[in-house]
Every structure is written in structure tokens, then in C-alpha cells.
Length: 157
Image 1: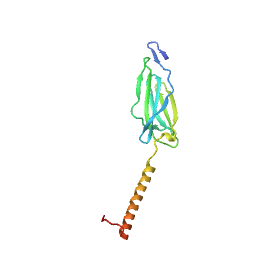
Image 2: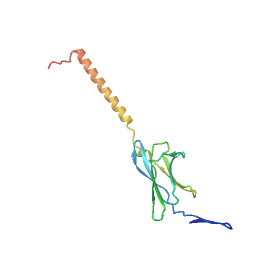
Image 3: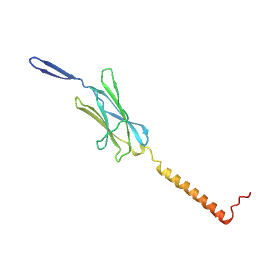
Image 4: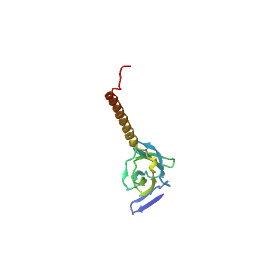
């Protein structure tokens, strides 16, 4: 408990802020969504209530997947959890920052998400199958025209 007492001849003020034993934010990979990876950040032991935010490797704040989940324990300390879906970047490094503005207390944790965790693009497969389908249609049309031209195409059975 941090306390500050100010005494004047007429007024006496006592101001206290209770600082919990905050935990280092813990980041985990919670799955994939679309072409991105869903990250989850959790931290507890905060008082007053903290702000949680996600950043990319250049320090730009990233949008979270909705508001943070906040819970208070029996000692009135806050535990905060927040998700963010991140897309592949040149570094794949992301930071979860928890900041208690009233007492200027900050904790952050960085994660590196390996390339192979991100969903694979199916563009190559789709292009390859499209080319194969066009080739089969072109070959079929060629055989049809050749048989029609040579007279080998007989509809009488």
C-alpha cells in the first residue's frame, strides 16, 4: 500500500493506492481465424483497473477482438484477458501491454508467431486446378474437332 499524507493547519488529507502483485502478461495462441492467428493475453493482480492493448513490431496499436474480459478476485484485484487476430508480417512479432495509468505501472510480453502457424493460402492450388480444367476442356474440344474433320465421329450406333 502506497500512502501519501498531506497536513495543513486546517486540513489533513490521506491518499492511498493499493498496488497488487501484478503478473507478467502471458500470451498464448488460441487458434486461427480467416488468414490470421488468434492471440490471447492474460494478466492478473492489478489495482486499479489496467488497460490492455496489442502492438505490432513497430509499436502500432492493433485492434482487439472485442473488449477485454475483466474479473475481480476476492482481494478486489483485476485479472484481464483480451484476444487479437493478427495477420502475417515480415517479423511476426506482437506485444501485449498492460498499463495501469494512475500509478504509471506497465508490463509487456512479446511473442514471435512462426510462419507455419498462419493458415496457408490456397491460391496456388486454385490456379493450378483452373489451368488443368482449361487444358482438359481444350483437349476435349480439339479431339472433337479432329474426329469431326476426319469423319471418325459417328453418331449412328
